[in-house]
Length: 353
Image (tube, rainbow, N blue to C red):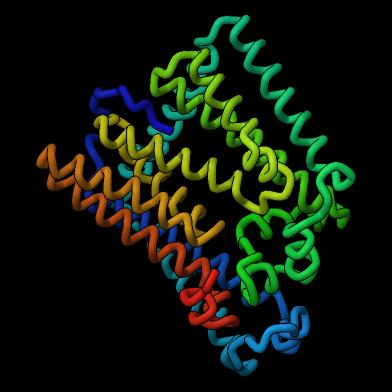
C-alpha cells in the first residue's frame, strides 16, 4: 500500500499509457497462462466426469469434445506466450519497468518503516495482540469446537477432486475459487481436513489483520485507534465465524483493504502511482476471483475515485481509472475462463444465490 500522504514526484514522472499497456500485458499473460494450466491439468475423460461429483441437481456441465478442450487451453497458452514475449521485447518499456520496481521497493520500505516507527512497547503490545487473536482463531477452527459446515462441502466436492474441479466446476456457489485453490495447494502437502481447509483461513485472517493495521497506521489513525479497530473487527461474531469456516471471506477483507488504501493513495496524489494502480488492479482481479460479489467493493472504490477525480478536474486520472476498471474486468474473466468453458456462462452470471 503506497504512502497516501506522499506528494513528492518520482524521477520517472507519473505513469501514462505505456505503463498501463505494460501492466495489461503482464497481468493478462499471467491470467491466461494460469487458465491454460487449469484446463490442461486433467484429460478430457476426467473433465467429462465432473458431473458425477454432485449429481443431485438437474444442471450439468457444458458439453464439449476433447478437441474443443485441447483448442481452448492451447489458445490460452498461446495468448499467454505471445503476451509474455511482447512484454520481454518491449525495449521502450524498460524505463517504466525500472520505475515500477523502484516504487514497489519504496512501498515495502515505507511499510516496514511504519512498523519500525512504533515504540518498542507498541510493537510488543501489537505482537501479543496478534498472537492472541491467532491463538483464538486456531482454537475456534478445530472441528471439535466449530463443526464442519460449508467448508466440508468445499473439501469434498472441489478441493479433493483436483485443480480442474476447483477452478472449473460450479454446480453451486459454495465453490469460492481462489480460496479453494489455496486449500488445494495445502491439500497437496497434507490431505487432513483441518490442515487443508481451516489452517489457510487462520493464516489469511492473521495476514489480513496485519495488513489492515499497517494501512490504518499509514492513514495516521494512531496506534491505539488502529489496534482497537482491528481487535473489535476481529472479535465480531461473523469475523470469528469466518476465521474458522470462512472459505475466502478473510481473503476478501484483505483484498478490500488493499483496494481501499490504494484508492486513498491515488486520491491523495501519491508519488508511487505505478505501485498503487498495480495493487488496485491485482487486488480487484483476485477479489473477484475469490467471490464475484467483490464487485460491490470495486463499485464503491471506483465510483468514489471517479467523483473525486471529477471534482479535481483530473481528466488524465479519470482515463487511468477507466483503464484500470476495464483491466480488472478482463483479467478476472480470463481467470474464470476454465469455469466459463466447462460449466458455462449461464451458471456463473445467472447464479440465483
